[in-house]
Image 1 (cartoon, rainbow, N blue to C red):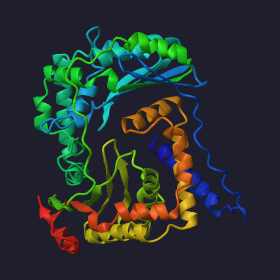
Image 2: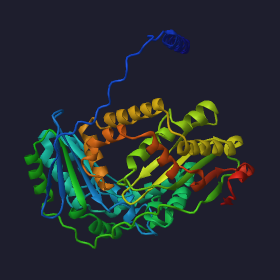
Image 3: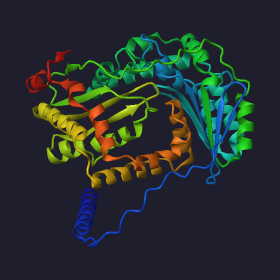
Image 4: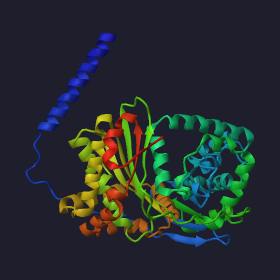
Length: 469
């Protein structure tokens, strides 16, 4: 039996090798046809209505599968509402929403959602908490009611809170053993300082301090209709969708004191150099970063394209340089992340100890080139196609469209951005890319965090004095 299995594996290997050889030896036509013209995302008319309690409703009808998708975005309920002693609190708050309500337990909620041919869940982000649900069109009404139930009346039962905290502590313990987690925490602090965006990762003390009563108080304060958007997408008419929303959410009111609006994050920061010691590590986790800008900033689209060129894909400059040409790493990346009140420019790679300093040199070389030289016509066109194609593919499904609209709204972008993004990308010029590179990727503004063995310090001398922690 064992021999036959080995022979089967050998035959399969020969078949795969033969196919690969045939594919590699096949000749391409002398002249390949040109790429088709990039298309904007076809967005149907969005019907909008604001209920008397302030809840915004956006309806996006789609004639496809007999399914309806719901996304409820609650602005200001996420990590920005967590106090300095509560990092990561919003993640526990969101995760417990569908773990029991005043009417049913977690298992009953899951079974009810499955019985409707769908699911319901919630998650936290920097700018808010998002509740998502879907069901067959025939179950659009009961799923809307279930979504409203977990949003408006979570129980935060003692048993569920204790279990969630125990799981969170175990997850944190595993995360803190990973160099990338430590590097991200240190880099966030360097980029954002005391701003809430800089403290999204939990601590054991913060998790342990969570109580059912604290969760109830936070829910009452953060979940408010006047700070919420409900996006409904699928095979449903606008009139029917709004009717269901009014029935489920029309009498919803916030009861606690609303969290303060998040202040603007800083646009510049002192450069920090930190080595987080990891004795006997065989590689270095290298991270670079500086403040960025809000998603609604005027030059946001050129910055997105510049991010793609420098480090947003396999064919990006830093990945080709450090992975393909130098062989320093399995993958390198860089780019911008933009939120409602600010953002960050980050980059990094996990590299061999002996090339830690050399890797920083290559990162900064690419950063500098982006801000000094005009990107070539072919490279610009390739990256525009990549951005446009990825955007179109990722927004094909109606649930994805609803999530994109809600995410854009949370970060301060209008609904029109959904359809305008690709045309705006197509209009970006080489000069705009260079300006974004000069403004956000200048090497002298980048903080550096390295997680690794102390012995790599000698390689870092050219980049400043490093604090060892």
